[in-house]
Length: 182
Length: 182
DNA sequence: ACATGTGAAGCGCTTCACAGCG
DNA sequence: CGCTGTGAAGCGCTTCACATGT
Image (tube, rainbow over all chains, first blue to last red; front, side, top):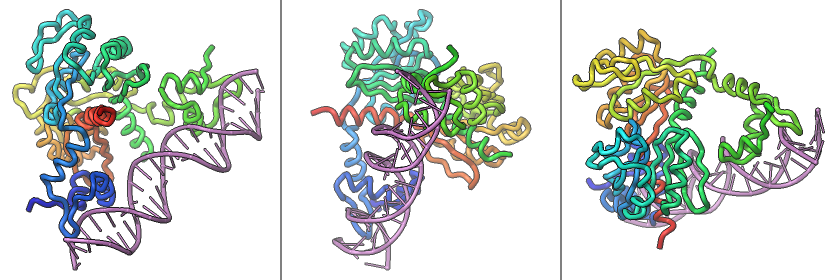
């Protein structure tokens, strides 16, 4: 009770047990030989190493279905990511309430993200608006961007961009199907 | 006109030019030295190699905001991925029309995906329903699964699963912020 | 001149295999 | 005896650098 082995962790994560041990060893060898890892301590060590003990303020730009999905995603709040702003350029959406927040105009993006100390911007706009939004986020001093749009955005040095391309994900599956047929 | 260099392609994709050339070389060396790649031919070669010339039928299970986002995602249809089924277990959603399709009951999932020759299943359900859905998809003969749920699903040999974890994506950004402060 | 194609080197993640420790 | 911690090997992707071709 209270302990878990690298083998068990590997099973749950769908990876190799040696990888689990090597990765956890970077936290400082808190496992007990012959026993495993103490779950609560491990949880704490991981949260500490990943920086999940400090809350991060997040803004989402582009309140379509994907933006709404992220705004209401329970996994975010759990790790201390607080959505503090929702922005769109569609007048029909402004004033709508999503996840307890009112949708605001992108015109207010720079000022609002500055005022609220937003550290992470999530771009869920169509492709043609993504670069413009990224520029605004950079201008507002946002250092991290999660880009769900279908284009690669260009950003000043020092801003960290991570792209998730849903079209690519499904294309990979299509490719594997293609590889294994005929 | 009609040609593009590895340098230009690399710029657009945000990668190294040598990588572009090496990757494209696997298609069979259709570039012209001193000139570049003929755009339309390149497009065709890529579509052929990735298997995008054949249409793939897709079912989406879990019609929340994320499911709806994917159902209406323009990038899918463009590459020949046809959404032919939307499933949910919430009676209130059944009969609703999303992207020209009526939402159906998950009870009909196995029969419907078999009948319609679904090859790719997209899981956008909450964590607690994901394994059950995956089992149903596997039972229906679906060979490829795109899993957006927050759990790792266990699947019979021969089924290809690809997981996209939105929580992980934002955690990586949080980690980088953590690394670069104090 | 200019841009491709590619052998070789580089790099980092993954896995192996076993010594070390409880 | 069981499970961790880790040096070393393995592996595949990325980048370099330049020979090759037009």
